[in-house]
Structure formats: C-alpha cells, structure tokens
Length: 207
Length: 253
Figure 1 (tube, each protein chain N blue to C red):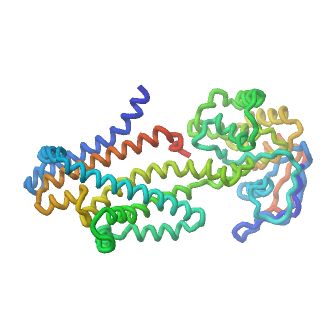
Figure 2: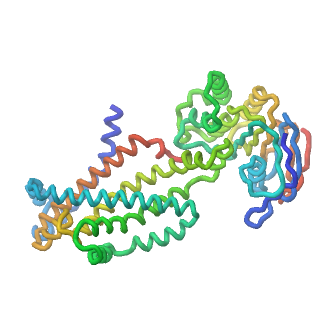
Figure 3: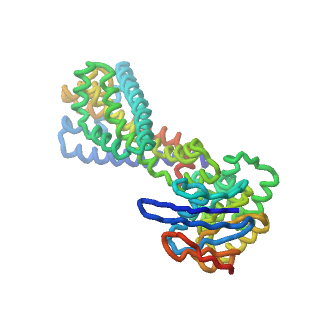
C-alpha cells in the first residue's frame, strides 16, 4: 500500500510537485508516466523516503521497500555478485542456500549468469541495470519504486523481468516511473499520467 | 607469471623516463664545459661519494625529515580536505590552500630558519607548510566526486551515515591517497632539500649547498641523481602497495 497525501516539493525556488495526493493498493502495479524532466525522479525520491525535504505525508505500511534507480548506481569496486549481495549485508540478511538459489534463478532470467565475477565497467549498461534490479528484489521487498528501470533494455527483456517479479512476489506493490507508453500500458494495472507541471494531479487510466 | 608482470609493469615508465632525462642531460653536456654541466658518465664516476660513512649519515637525516614532514602533511592535508568537504567550505579552503601553495619556499624557509634556527625543525616545518595544501586540495576534490545517487542507493537499503562513509567516501579516497602519497613524497623531498640547503648543517641539501659553494657540479649532480633514484624507489613502493592491495578502487566509476 502507498498513500501520498498533499505532497509539495520545492527545489531551488521552483515547485516540482504541488499538493499531490494519490494512493496505490497493495499488490498493484502502477506506472507514473510523464515526459522527461517533469519531476518523476524527484517524486520517486520523495515517495521512497530518500528525499525528506518536502511537505505532506507518505504512508507505506510496508515491511521492506526497495528502489531501482534510473542510473544503476553500482559500486565500481564491487563485482556483480558483491553488488547484488550488498543490501543483504546492510539489512543483516544471511546469505543462505535459499537466497543463493533465488540469486541463481535471477541471474539466469536476466542473462547475467557467468558474469558474477565481473566488475561494472566490464558489463553493458543494460546488464548493470539488471544487476541493480536483482539487488533490490533479492531482499524480498513488498513495495518497490522503479525509476525508468527498463530504459536501457529491449521490451522482451523487460517483459521477462516483470513476469519474474510477479511470479516470485505475487503480492508486491510496484510503482514504476516511465516515459514510454508501451511499458506503461504493458506492465501496469493502472497508469498515472502527468499532464502538467508542476505535478499536481494524475490522469488515471486502466490499460 | 602474473605476479611478476604486476611487479615489473610499473617499473617500465619510470625507467624509460629516467633514460630520457639521462639522454637529454647527456646531449646538453655536449654543449657546455664539464665544470658547468658534466656528462652523466662523469657524474656517476663520483660513486665513491657513496662509500663514505658521512654520506649515509646525511642521507638518513634527509630521509628522516622527508618522512616526518610527509607523514605530518599527509595526515593534516587529508584531515583538512575531509573537514572542508563535510562543512561544505571546500571553495574557501581551496582558496586558502592555493595561497599557501604559491608562497615561495625559499622565503618561507628563511622565515623558519629565523624562527627556529638551524636543525631539523625548519626543514620539517617547510615540508609541512608546502605539502599540506597540495594534499588538502586533492582530498577535497576527490570527495567532491561523490555521486549523490550512490548515497541514495545506500540509504534506500537502510544504510546509515557510517555505511555511506565506509562504502562511498573511503573508496573514493583511496585513489586520492595514492596520488597524494606520490606527489606528496616528491614534494616533501624537494622541499626538505631546500630546507636543508637554507637551514641545516646536515642532510643531502646541505651537501649540495657545500658542493655548490666550491662550484663542484659533478658532486652537486651526483647527489641530485641519488635523490632522483630514491624518489623513484619510493614511487615504486607506493605504486606496488596501492596496486597490490587496493587495485579494485582504481577501476572506472
């Protein structure tokens, strides 16, 4: 569940989000669709609690949440495997056999199998993005924010990943940000379209 | 074979550079009187200077001052760079450090000589004054490269401030520390020699000053070659340590 209530975000004296309210039901996949530069990333940062400098409230009521950033944000000095396992260490989640099996399954689905020992500068941007996705989902979150997660992937890879997410986490709540109509309509239960800036209201459609 | 390659690879460029310097020097010596610019071979013929017990005494004084000055300026410069970044006053600190950096070492050396007299303190103080700004500026510049996104990534996994420091800032500091160690020791050596030249009765700088007074350019240049070789060895040790233990931090971000 996600409930945003009267969110306003001002950055450098410019209003990016203006009195925005909306809610997402548990287990729902929604896409925030907006053109580039309209404030999607800012909204995701606010909703995910990374940017605390805003007015209004965000209720999530979740056990564990995760974020997939637009830029993969991998540690340059860690291998693919170490990057994937990174949040487990921070959250004190042990690397058990079950975890290893899930990781192996993710690696196979995303085509990263065999690249475990590679460093980020040795793999493509799409692979880095896949690595960032696995890193987030391995912690078993129940709410995930994904900012343009498939921008450097083809539609088939994106579909595969979304299907795998839903197969592994049937009750997960996903909030995707995208500027692509294809992805928005193909992956979501509802599309929240931004029609004006600053973001103050969504035009909600059901694909 | 791999460890051997790893060890010898960093040797190639310094040795080639040394060869180029020697070749330029040798060419230059063809156009001047040997009393003004002796050839590399004539200069290296003064290797007998190495055999005197006094030489090692002077060398140990110089190395002691270089290391003391370098360690103090490394610690101080790193600390100043970190504080500047944390307090978001990098621009101010950089301006101040830049001012210190352009102070003529000769003048500062004379000032320290007048303040603390002849001995080890003046050269060490000179090293600290002249090297710290370089290290502070470099440290602050490295920390400024921290990507806010990476901080966001760590925080999104419930990472604390300590996690951000450990996983983002310290890895960013490693390449800067390697550069600081390389530049810092070279600078420390040059400045320590200047300090000894002005305000000391021992050390290689002092020996160079004495040889200069007698216009013995062979001896002056011989000590310069010795210093050059020492700096080269120090650089290789630094390179081996960093590339041996911290190589992964040097990968492109």
